[in-house]
Length: 235
Picture 1 (tube, one colour):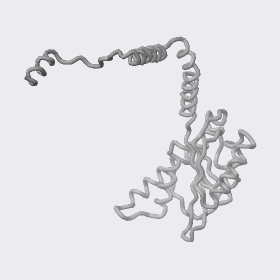
Picture 2 (tube, helix red, strand yellow):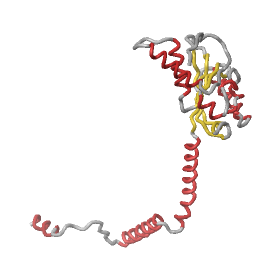
Picture 3 (cartoon, rainbow, N blue to C red):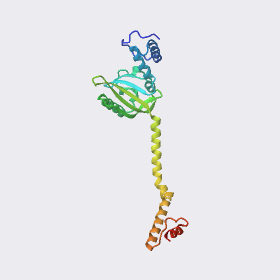
Picture 4 (cartoon, one colour):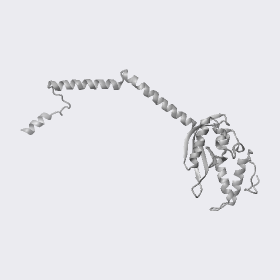
């Protein structure tokens, strides 16, 4: 694949099937010209693009107003869309967020908070699997990116699929709740703990009665020959 002649030229979004491979080839060429401690500006850009597009989690780059400028391949594949579909458009209009009005409003509010410098994180259901035909739960966060003057210029959005993890957590909570609900029924039907408590109470009652009658209650048995030894010491 030929190397780009002008990396500053503005052109249409390339959604060709082999654009990911093109980035890898260009990066390989730039690394071949690099040396320890020395790299080209193009190499730095390609390192970021290759890394971004080969990440397992979803990742997107927005400006501080929530306009989407880049997204990785995993997120595009999950929603069944292309970069041309969402490039330069509000993030909340993308297919991932078309699960409900509440989901989109929550995202808008989160972007507003992040634009003021706050790190935002929450779980949310999005359209993100089977080429946009399945809803998943993601652990979603927005990281504000500031310039040298401390102004928020960009927002990095990340999402990790936690659908199965959250399902297992809900199952465990449900199982514990069911076990707790059944526990009183088992205790009232004569469990070991209940029988032990009743026996202890009965024994305490007998001991109290014996004390009142003047009966000596011996808690420990003296060792064999203890009386003979005591007599010998007293003589």
